[in-house]
Length: 446
Ligand code: ASP
Image 1 (cartoon, rainbow, N blue to C red):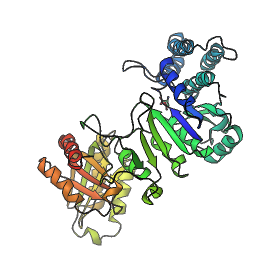
Image 2 (image 1 turned 90 degrees about the horizontal axis):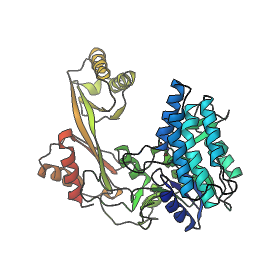
Image 3 (image 1 turned 60 degrees about the horizontal axis):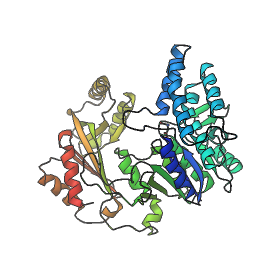
Image 4 (image 1 turned 120 degrees about the horizontal axis):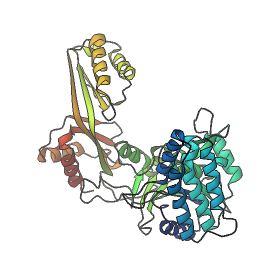
């Protein structure tokens, strides 16, 4: 049995939803279908979820939401009409829209309003597929502090989802114990799909999107990145941390802990085999086979800040690193890496969203409390992660990496390799970032 989740582009129009229906009906194992709200039809379009947030904002400003609600109802009417659903018995889109409209008028919460895109998307898809519609409010539960409650959710899924009948379920939200609608963070329908797959013990969680799979490198920079056919959960984590995102980061937890693989598929190219994300232990035991390449993928991010702290005999001073870390925490900065030498420690901080005064306060505190001999801040650093289980115990990896960067005339500012030999992190200057990615990608011909 498999769970299939379709993203916003797949749900954006009657045309794309018909493709979704073809994919579902041609797969006898597909029991549970989780859907996003309609996304953009082209680059100038607006996602339904964004229209709903706008509508909520409008309601807070004034009593009249006619103008804000109209594009939402038009969008759903058009989809239902083009799919030939209007007038079908039991299909009452008008009633559903009227109820939503009156809830918004009555001051419904922001999460409730935002969740209605997924709700209507699933309502329409269930009618088209002639499968039961199961509202996520019936099965996905949060506690009253807003934390996802896996135990109750899994029990509700076991009780309310019938694998024989199957179901279409809206993604992105659930309810708290006191039945207030609560959404996951943006892109959270991926999480709902993973929860249903975990709860129902699916053989595979298929995540249908608009790309052929996870790529070996960023297609905006690398000319010929390839689709990775098999990637482990560990490799995926390392690459997505560096921004190579196809899936919502939280969507792996409910399936990973139950050894359920995820397959990324493309609704617009269903014949492509996609990327299979597999449990790391099973892969390392040889249960999944892929070409034996040293690297699986390369990803990176710009705009890190490196703070270098130097103090002679630092190693003899107890609690130095702990005090340094407390200062970072007090300044509300998040630490990404902390390479160290005998008398030096560097703090690598993700600079996006960091305010200048946070860094200034941190530096003042370090000077005052730790009295370093030298304190230097270097900003504009890019980190690149070179990732793959194939690197483990393979000689010469580092020399190949440094050689490729040397030949491309790029200076390496820092190197960090974990003892698992799964990941080597290299820091270069922002201005060398793209050239470094290209040089590494072509060196390893992945
Ligand atoms: N519709 C929501 C969003 O735009 C959730 C999702 O699509 O997964 O973020």
